Length: 340
Ligand code: ADP
Ligand code: MG
Image (cartoon, rainbow, N blue to C red; front, side, top):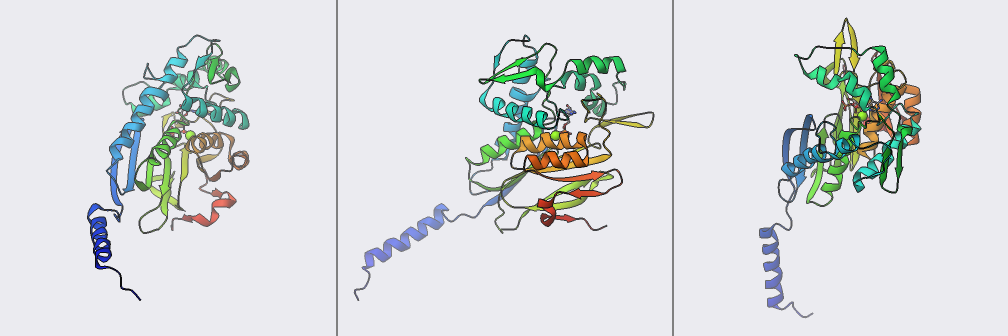
């Protein structure tokens, strides 16, 4: 047999050396970051063969809030729609159009338990601001105020057609119940165009897992214990791209005369939802869906909520006031309860 010419051998060795030096067999490096964005904590653990992208991801979430979702920032897309004249079709950015179509579907399927047109009612309660501030005097709205706010809400008073939205008079959009999940969706889209090989990123109560860890072990995503938020009730083991959102009565609330008024409102009554639940966690293939469903399920309660999530192929964990856990069938194998 003829021996391999020396010149070929030399070039192979040279190629190998170059490959090692230029990093073509580079192992992913991990970066972590904790920032405030969208009025909540943004936590990132990212594995990449490229640059540290955590700063870009933080900016992505902040700009989503500033330019699109916030009803407080006057030049955001939502604030613009809320200030627009009723009855006139307004064109939407492509991404917001897609999000609103999904949110309207969740509103419909949940019978309005989730409703993205509650801006007047949530503004009236103003629980987020009241819960954060020591200075503002706590005030519970009157029944008349609540009734009036409910008259000015309803997902069926919104028309989505040909990339445009038309609002009936008095309607104010509030995407607060899906905003953090939408942020996770945008992060997921962004990650696909980078050298990031794996990430777990949380925006408040919404989490995205993406890709894998270098050692191949699954991501661990915990559920907070509503009785003691410094502890976990249990953890999910997940691999690949998933979106997990939790809604709970312990997140933002005010207490008046021993009664807890939390930030998830029942659009039927106009008051904080009374469904005997402490929290609902939803796992789905989209962040907007998992976030909207976690709110809807909290309002609907365990039985109806579980059926709604199943309709959207999402998995759920319900925690009731007695501390009981209810898991949907599809996640029983990937959930591990914390030992007492
Ligand atoms: P968090 O914002 O703490 O993650 P949620 O995702 O459950 O919690 O969203 C709660 C927010 O959504 C409220 O602060 C309010 O702005 C809005 N909201 C409250 N009740 C509803 C509801 N039934 N449907 C849609 N949005 C709601
Ligand atoms: Mg939600």
